[in-house]
Every structure is written in C-alpha cells, then in structure tokens.
Length: 194
Image (cartoon, rainbow, N blue to C red; front, top):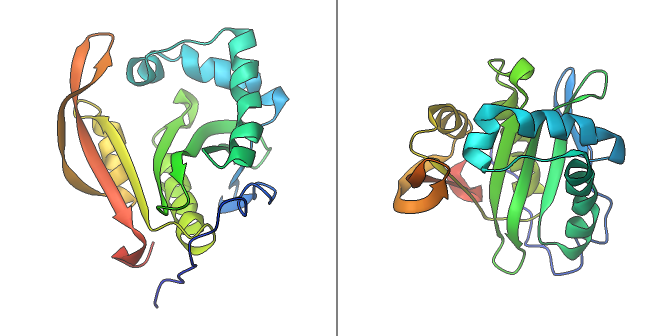
C-alpha cells in the first residue's frame, strides 16, 4: 500500500490548528502537555538515564515551565511535544519534533520514556505514530534524530521505527562525562510504509 503524501504546509497553517491527539495503539496515545503533567516530567528528569542523555534536572517550577512552553512553540511552528499517555491518561513518556522547518519540510525528533514504562515498545510505537502524522498530515519530508553512540536503547528505538543510520557525528555533543560521538538517523517520507 503506498504511503499517503501530503504537500508541505505553508507557514502559519500548523500553528493555526489545535495540536492533534494521536492514537498509538490500544491503551496508548499522544496528546499535548498540560500543567498537571509537571510532576511526571519532574520524575522523568530525576531518572539518572534521562539525565545522562539530556544533561539536565528539573525542579518543580522548571517542570511546570517545561510543560507550559509547548503551546507557544506549537503556535510558533518551531517545535512540538506530545505526552505519551496510558489508558488512564497518565504520561509515561514524551515524543516530539524539534527544529521544525516547514519551508524545508523537515524536523528533528526526540523521545524518552519513564523508567516504569520501559521495555514494552512504547517509545518505538510512539515514534512511529508521530512519524506517520508528520508525513501524512504535517507534510514533512525528512525526520532526523541524533543520539549518543553509547545510548544503545535509543539506537534500538530509532532502528525499529525505520530510521536508518546515516553516519556518526564525531565529538558532537558534550554530556556530563565528556564529548560524545552521535549517531545520525533519518527517515524520509519516501522510505515507504511506516
């Protein structure tokens, strides 16, 4: 079955819409962040594994600011983030678009999952759902992501979601333990079924 292809969206068309609620699989969906999600964000950034790759911690005020920023970034069409939520509408992770360039039809993707939700394919399925929406509804052509070459879990998620490794960016990002080489993965709208 051919992949549905949407034309690139002109500036202003994405921000004029409400951020969509996206189904992932039974019992799992993507929705915009709310103020009452700040405690889940704080838990995420208290996790040593998330701190290692994101090089930050958040206190309560910072977690509230983190969740609040996304509405404006959606309107500005520069970035978007979705809470990955379970059947009870509780956040179990995050998937998002960074560096959105509608004129170039491209963006970077990011994701993380709370420790209690790991090992169930949640990040992979959420990334697939976001990728499908990005290519069929948002009109994007290229999605890319980077992760430390030491982050094997992130590499598995990217590969399982169909993001091919394009290369290694040497000494590209500084983490708390020094400079890391980064895998560059990407997926094109023309790569086929998601």
